[in-house]
Image (tube, rainbow, N blue to C red; front, side, top):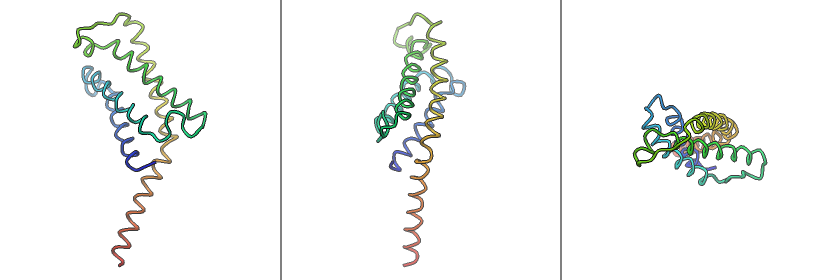
Length: 146
């Protein structure tokens, strides 16, 4: 894992936290930023060195599959219940009573899976951040000592 990937992951997390709280920004911004967050999270998956399956670990594969399925369900159902995105395109989706509960459940599953993902990946990310900081401290000590 590279430091740039860890920093990108932090940005992805910040975007998710903002988008997952429609009360903070209002529904219209939540909807449009949600589409943008989907693109950012998809880029995160692509940029991940482990890919979908991790390092051959079944648990990592299952977690990543749950994350991607929950994300897809959240985005699709969010678009289908949209009060801003679809109407701005002149569209209206039927089945609000199906899509709205699906959106709520998918968002909760996504949050739960994301929390597990954070707990699993945080030690490696922190190690990378600490290692780089330690290298910089050692380099500055060498420069100051010479």
